[in-house]
Amino acid sequence: MNLKIALLPGDGIGPEVLAQAVKCLQAVEEVFNHHFVFKEAPVGAIAIAKKGTPLPETTLSLCQEADAVLFGAIGDPKYDNDPDAKVRPEQGLLQLRKSLGLFANIRPIMSHQTLLNKSPLKKEIISGTDFVIYRELTGGIYFGEKKLNAEGTVASDLCEYSEEEISRIAHLAFKAAKNRKKKVTLVDKANVLESSRLWRKVVGKISESYPDIELEYLFVDNAAMQIILNPKQFDVILTENMFGDIISDEGSVIGGSIGLLASASVGEENALFEPIHGSYPQAKGKDIANPIASILSAAMLLEHFGLNEEAWAVKKAVDKSLKKGIVTPDLKPKSQYGTSQVGDFIAHNIVDIEDNINMNDENIDLGKSTII
Ligand code: IPM
Ligand code: MN
View 1 (tube, rainbow, N blue to C red):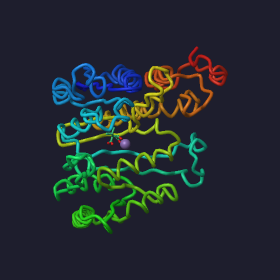
View 2 (view 1 turned 120 degrees about the horizontal axis):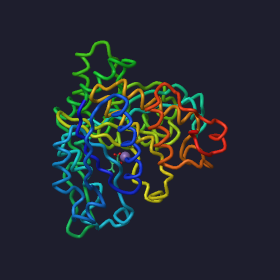
View 3 (view 1 turned 90 degrees about the vertical axis):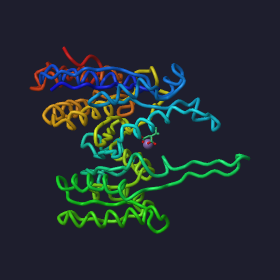
C-alpha cells in the first residue's frame, strides 16, 4: 500500500518519540512491502517560534493532502505559566482537529499482564481491563464561545453540542461495541447540564437501532470513581470532549504508565494518530521518554488502513519489549534503555517477526546490549 504520512513532531519529547514510531513504520514497509512517504512540518511552540503561529498554513495543507497524520506532542511551560499569552501551542492541535474534522478520538485502555505491578491500583482490580474511550473531539467547551470582561475579572466558556455532533460519534461507538463486549456507557452530567441531557436523548434514540448493544448511563463523577474501583465493567465509554480528556488520563493509570497510551482521531476524510501524553518538557532531549504510546499510535494508523497483520506485528514487538524489560525508566526505574534503544528493539522485532534474533537474555538482565 502507498501512504502519504504527515509527521508533526511538535514540542518537548514529541520529536524523540515520533522518531521511534517512524522507525517501526519503516520496518513494516520493509517486511510487508509497503511504500510510505513521510513529510514533516512544525506545529505548537516550535511553530510559534519559527513562524509566529502554532499551526502554519503549510502545516495544515500538508496534513490535508496526506492520508494520515502522525503527531508527537504539544505544549511548553513558557505558555502554561503565562495566563495572558495570546497564542498558545495547544491552539495548534485544537485548530488542526477542527480543520481536519477529527470528531472522534479513540483511546484504548488496557492492563498489561507484565505491568500489573506498575500501577498503584491493586492487581486484582486492573487485571483483565480492556475498554475504549470514544471522546468527542471537535465540540463542547473546548470550542464554545470564550469571554472575558473588560476588567478581566469575569470569564466564561460555552459548552454547546448539536444533535448532529452527538450522533456521528455515537454511531461509531455503537459500531465499535458490536465487535467487542457489546456495551456502551454514556458518561455525562445529565443531572446538571442541559448539553448532557441532549446527549442522553440523542444516544438513547440511536441505541434503538443497535438492539444487541446494551446502553448504560453514568454521571462523570461516578464514572471517575468506577474507572479505578472496577474498570473491568467497561467496554466502550462514549463521552463529550472535556470529560473524555479527563477520564482518559485517569484511565492511563491502569496501564501502568501514561507513556503507553495511544490514540486515533478520525473524521470523515482525515485521520491523526497521537499518544495521549503531553510534551513532558522535563524529559526533552534526555532520551528517557517512553516511545511506546507513539509506536502504538502508529499501529492504530496501520489498523485504520486495514493493515491488521502489520499492526499486530508492531503490537507483538511492543509486547516483547515489555516482557523482556527493554523499557524506559518510567516502567523500570533503573533501566538503562533509552527512548531510541527501545525504538530500535521494537523495530528490529518487527523485521524479525519469526523471533529469530539471537537475543542475549543475560545481557538484557544486565541492561547491556540486546542483540548479539
Ligand atoms: C489531549 C491533550 C489536549 C486536549 C491538549 C494538549 C490541548 O490533553 O489530547 O488529551 O486537551 O485535548
Ligand atoms: Mn488530555
